[in-house]
Amino acid sequence: MYVNVLRSKLDAGEAAARHAAQSLLRVLSHSETVRIIAATGASQLDFFESLTSTPGIDWQRVEMFHLDEYIGIPTTHAASFRKYLMERFIRKTGMTRYHLLDGEQNPDHVIRVIGRELKSAPVDIAFVGIGENGHLAFNDPPADFDTDEPYLVVELDEACRWQQVTEGWFGTISEVPLRAISMSVKQILKAKEIIATVPGSRKARAVKACLEGEISPLAPASILRRHPNTTVYLDTESASLLAETTIRST
Image (cartoon, rainbow, N blue to C red; front, side, top):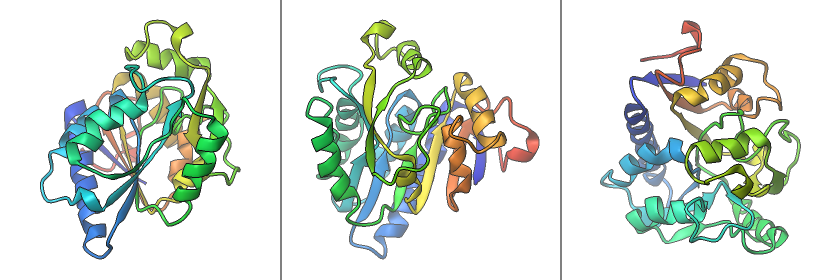
């Protein structure tokens, strides 16, 4: 794992986007299509803003898979991850090959259909974040490190639900759904490359636990350290509790 610390949230998002663009162009130089996984949330805003404004990427050759989505949230809701991706990624790039998780439909059917598409070929790059409770996608602690299913229905813990309130996606915790569809941990790790963007002081404890603590389902994103090609982009706030030996560059 490579850990890079930038001075600000904006710097971290832009650095991650430059890396992502280089990786996309590298794959497209020798492959007709590049398959990616896209995360959402406040931590990814600067990343997507920078990536979608990068010239030279043929987005018609990009196939995107959705990382996670609430169950029961319509696309008109401010917290809808489908809405987020449509507004901040898909429409800005003109991408036509994408697979969104519809949390208003029968989750078993959604998981089966999109999971089959996801497993049909390898994923080249996964763009992810780390939650305040250390979650990876919506795999809250203790996460399932063993399931081979590409997607699963998960129960959201209280820490995860409070994060959605403090970030402004919901007015109260009672409004936050109790369940979601999430890509599984094993499926995320199947991506050939993983780029994680994790800014902000509220992520500092989770970053320390996942990057320096025991690799454990209790710190789900700690499993990224077992992936052979993961790069993490932090800002000074999210990296504030890390030991100097953990940090690759500043």
